[in-house]
Image (cartoon, rainbow, N blue to C red):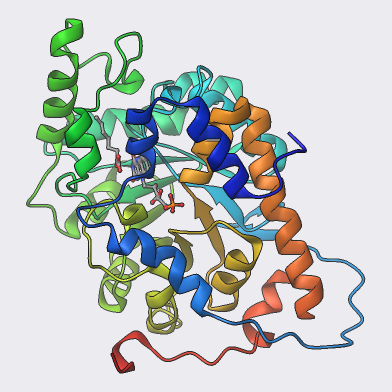
Length: 368
Ligand SMILES: Cc1cc2nc3c(=O)[nH]c(=O)nc-3n(C[C@H](O)[C@H](O)[C@H](O)COP(=O)(O)O)c2cc1C
Ligand SMILES: CCCCCCC(=O)C(=O)O
């Protein structure tokens, strides 16, 4: 794996290995993909101002997330159907996170089941991504299974009342290959014929989405579980406050990897005002979207995120080398972040927000 020096190297290699429909499914964003590009460009527009002669002899990246120590503030976001990247799918990804001492988030729409992932990576700090479905009994049973299997938090996706329009998926009529399954849904899904499979899965999962959902959903989730709840898909300060008031323990500032609605801001752009809005609440703030280098991670931490999650980079790593590929991806980011911390002149992750020297204009005060 040593020949892969950057996350871009892993993406390039994965693109050679995977089929075009799968690459397009992973890579694509909503409609014109402007926000997809912006997620990365907005990081590139930010500058780091190093402090010199700070006497730093090493970088300690350890931090605490929801009271749990992780080796670095970089974890893995949920993404559906990971066996399309590698036969070991979610199991390999979770084992990589376990080996690297960080968070792994399992998607509800996974190709390895909650129980398979839990038994393969018993010591991983595992989170389970949920939707509050129209049929709440479906969600309740999934949550009970995740809780029993040792998952430590629920990541509630709040930005997907329906699926976004990704044109390449439509062009390819992207389908889950016949030999794979949505492992957490087996008890509900009719056994489809190969031909009917995609239609039945997509319409079944799509049909479960509750378009009338409100913040009451968090209250309901809290009534059925003691697990901490993280609202995933927050882009506005007022929604962040609502999440805090509804009883979430954390929020993930996310635009779903720019896959839901094109034209929304890059996540790093809205992070500072969201952090500011919830500073008086007991709420951890994380970020995902476009993180591909250690300097991106540093910038997100400096602007107030406690941790970042990566979605696509874990899929590229998985495609290239299974568990080893995901570990390589995490270690590239780890090394780049350590290097950034040392050269930028800041020692502890927890002090970064105080010491980093950014000039930042809030999103709503910028001239076009
Ligand atoms: C192929 C793919 C599948 C995804 N599946 C899910 C999912 O099942 N549930 C969910 O909440 N988010 C899903 N996401 C969004 C990710 O959790 C995450 O927000 C996003 O990928 C972060 O952006 P990044 O890919 O630039 O790191 C998916 C993203 C991708 C690329
Ligand atoms: C057929 C299940 C699709 C799950 C949706 C995954 C997702 O959120 C994505 O962005 O793709």
